[in-house]
Image (cartoon, rainbow, N blue to C red; front, side, top):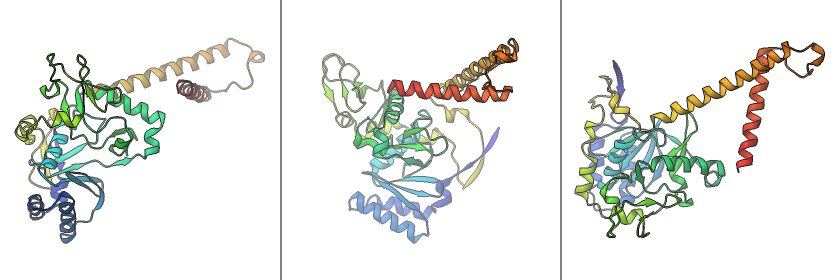
Length: 322
């Protein structure tokens, strides 16, 4: 089976511009100034973009339906590589990283709608976030995504299904990585605190910040942990190429998530339809005088009424649980 692969990076950024981007990263100026220089260079090359944010090591811009994260230093390159490495494994709880240059200079991602601080604090949003954090923490540690107001800008909603997800997840490591062991005699693996912000040792109870743990890792170890990202996906040399489909490039640890959603919905549909049929049979067994005048006349009407009653019960249960 074959499919067409589109390179958004090659489509929007000429090779000469990419070379100049890379030169900017090694200028003797701070990262904020590098970001400004990169924006000016895009204007010089006629690249129409919308600024969407700026961080310590990367800037974000949007061109049409794609967000690009451009590195401002070597750490920014590593961040892009790390997100590209783990994006498929973490679906559907993080943004999709479509493409990344092998050295991590630029990554192409899907656009999300940012949530406000007010929405972040809402009970329903909080429950969604904690559900995601609980699932992810079984496999990974990720920094700067815990439930605290200062992290609200790292969460947004997918434009297609409006599900909440993580925008930046560069500080990601597997839970069994030796980096996440306490320095006490037990050498136990660390665990998240209740809000998934800091870490602690389950034996000696010593607390750790994510930053303290990351400082243990040197650049060489980090590069070795990430590996060669060119082996993780298709390698193309033009704006569009036809490739042989490789299903190994899109494997998520949460493939069961949507399957379970579908199963739950099907079960709910069966329950509703069985109840509708029961009501129809009940009507057939009684005389017209015994039937409530408000009972609908057709199967479609009964189904509609059942859905309305089911939704009302769900709303009532949600209110009762809050």
